[in-house]
Image (cartoon, rainbow, N blue to C red; front, side, top):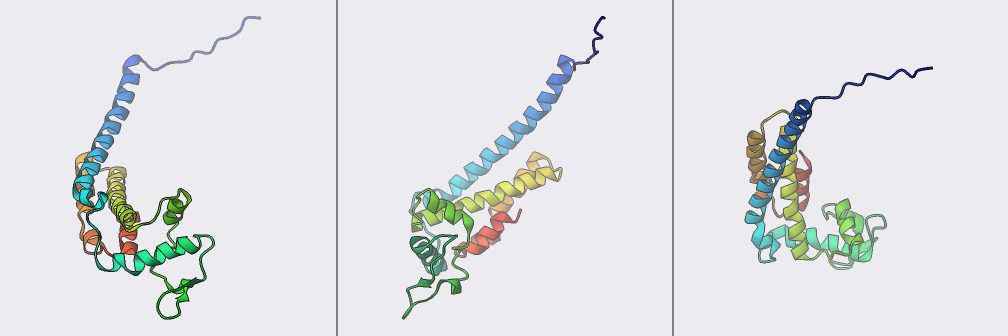
Length: 179
């Protein structure tokens, strides 16, 4: 008995090139836009990453000290019960704005990265880049051209939410996750 062969139509080389060309162009545009955002970010925060600049006011106070104590005496999943500052100390769960409940800090602890002030500044700065990249991806998904999406991402990178609240880690983190 003769076997019947199926007639399978393969796309022409021109069709394959067209499809790959579109994907490749989109991919290259996104890589270019991402590299441009990274360049803006490194230019803006180069002194922060070098450890020469630090965010002011509340950033160097309770926001940082509570998180350091939280991970020195416990972890995200096993928090300390008591923070020993201010007279006789206070229950750790009273420090609601400490940022210690932020899971990426636990990841830093797992990989043995000390949450020093310099590393805290670097971590905070990376959130600004994350927010800008989020806007880039969001605007591209909404159908904007890469140029408009990059303009929106750069605008978000320099937005007032990041810079007027640079000392408030919870606000900067919320701004980064928002897009």
